[in-house]
Length: 315
Image (cartoon, rainbow, N blue to C red; front, top):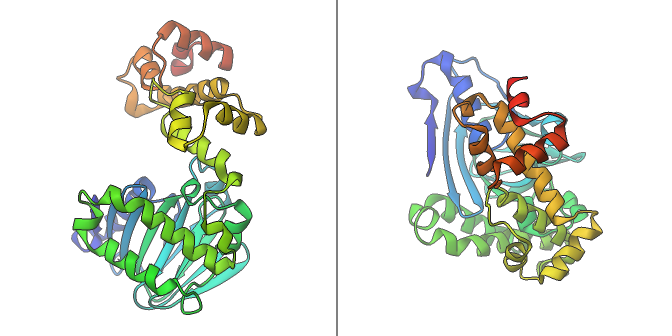
């Protein structure tokens, strides 16, 4: 596991803030309402990463978690969470549906839309976080799969729950050299159990054309700071030709070079205002976002925002 937190080791006055800081920084931005006062509340978090799959094992006193509409709108990389109930019960609310979870059951929810998680009897669950694009499911299908109890009625539910429990509990698999090898099978199993739940078995076959643009943009975002980012590299990772890559982007009204430049400029603009990066020169910030030529960066920045990078930093 990469990070752990046990609030029993903290002063009561520090517990709420410590939980929020870890969850916001390493899991997801949500509002957390503890039902008990600070001296009585208890939270234990253990975080890990298995390739693209994040793992968060949680035990806590009664809590309500809300992903507000504002937080959902601010999401730059939507994720899908799978919450697996270990003991007790909980309620997942999203898109007008409620999923009551009992031990061994699970449900998914999407960070691109508001949701609420109710743990009136406390939390004893493991949460798995995967990039929305990695599931390669159409938006409508994913929406239909959220906040639905997945359990005995799904022939893949028990297998999925058992597999994910083992993945979360075995550090030799989760954090060792095997982690990269099990990432793709883990995503495929989650995808399969969702498509079975939807009764859309055809979706569990080859990655869908309808999600290709989403996956391409997610790939580009993940490599924005790479100065060698190119259409050829993206196409190779997505197993398509460069010509087809441009065609996919054009359908969404996107030109590769212009979109990459705009995203990099926006990232640099944020960094120039970051109090944590005041020690970096403008040229260093430019290099950080893939601009090898500081003069070219300054010219592009002024064209986009009407002022130089130095003027923006000091404004």
